[in-house]
Length: 207
Length: 330
Image (cartoon, rainbow over all chains, first blue to last red; front, side, top):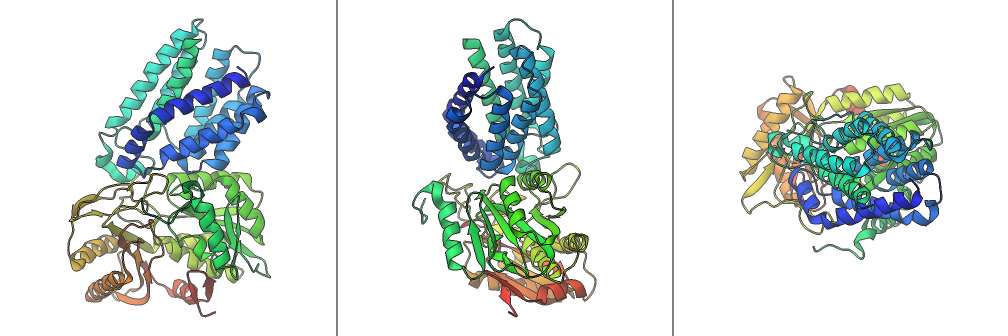
């Protein structure tokens, strides 16, 4: 893990999310208010702008600074939650561990912080329906030697989590105001989170 | 999209700069981090009231910064909660030695960002969460009711109490009390267009309305055919009164709020419908406010808000206020 790889991941996330811009916007307009995609893209662009400044820093510093940047530029629920994820991850960074071990522990801590910040858990039609299963699977597989295999598994877990939000009646966030009417719609935050995870996993598979 | 715009990305900052210049006698506008604060600082210790939320609801909240109401307001991007650094900077700017009271509409994003701000600031602070919208049933399974047009009534009345030098606890408790006495519900006749999106958030056909709509063009309770103003009033007020359970001869404040795209003529017509109906139910409207105060960009439609009045609330409603959008007795 280093600055170059971290910023490569952000670049890949930005490209993937951008390719699904209209789809995510439409999902949000169906059950939210349509601002999610703009907040996410604005945040990712702000992160990419930090590359020259941060690329040579230690990974924990990079995660922390990325989190602070998201916190101060994105706004809304997604800003607070993704900032909490990144800052949470920075706290668990341990240079002694290999990348998979390290990322698994960091991600687990980040997702736990998000659950606290959002007072939310799995099954409430949010991005956590993607992130919690991914974080649990990562912990289970953290000692695997074949990192591509882990990445392939994570892609499936993330997709299953994303699709599971379709049939849930939302109990958190804007979609909760819709009750039954949000049923049948995939949560836009779950979709963007799943796409981000897929982009990172593909990076590991292609290496 | 037909809007007055130069660059979509600059809408908020250009608007804030204009707002600051137009009301330079009352407020200062700070950019990056964005916040609006009072021009004339109080010359005494008082609880500092800070509100904020997504932009697109103007005049809420910046229009209510000034004597007798807010000390500062933090505008986020259109319909997106502001970020914690805005509230932190505003807190440092307007701290007057008696603590900070945040007034927050009950939306997940606002709650989370204000919580993060509360963690960051060193001053004693508390938060009043406004959740006056009865369109969404409150239950343990939901985020709860939304904060809508009743928010400005909470801001006006706590603002008045804070001017008297009341403590942080007193202001917090009074805010919760006013919130409990207040209920709102609205209906939308058209959607609105978030500038960054460039197209309407939802589509309503010519004879449809969204009943129980929120203030972001997010869908409400149900979509149905439009009705007469009297029928709509009855349906909305039934929901509000069921929540407030007023006594016989209860005195109330009746607020008709426009969402931005409905003429005042219709809003006054709606007030007439509401007043008449309340009179029949032996509810006495002794205070009134009609206009576009909590808007959703250019959305057509409006909402009713009722606050049950007691002596305290009336006094703090009637007291002097001098903001860009609400001004009396001063």
